[in-house]
Length: 172
Image (cartoon, rainbow, N blue to C red; front, side, top):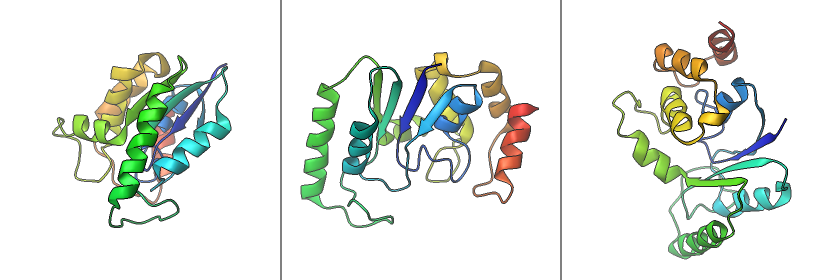
């Protein structure tokens, strides 16, 4: 089975509630999730370069440009770093391979705000992540799972028993 490597900032970690990499994994695919909360563009590209191979599939969701590498909290964005990150992103996009899909967190964020049930959290609700996958990666999701996710509705962020709640939804 082909591995799917996923890269994003907090939009891919699943720390608030399940997000797109967790949905792909629950759909029966082998996922190696390289996402990290507050990861910088430089760090994410470095991780990709260290793990890229021609046999697997890679989904890159670039974080917001201008994050200072290693800083795990909101901070003032530096224009020079933003310019540097935008150049890195442009260079990366021009490097595209057939087994690499590229998007940005900003694209998903803008798209997700078209849904009234997105929620008020920084990350869109799990059902919005499922819709994003149905739109861009229908080959990597279980359609029945996506229906369950949409019927489940909004998730409480950082629920104390998230793993059990997710397992019940996936298995039930």
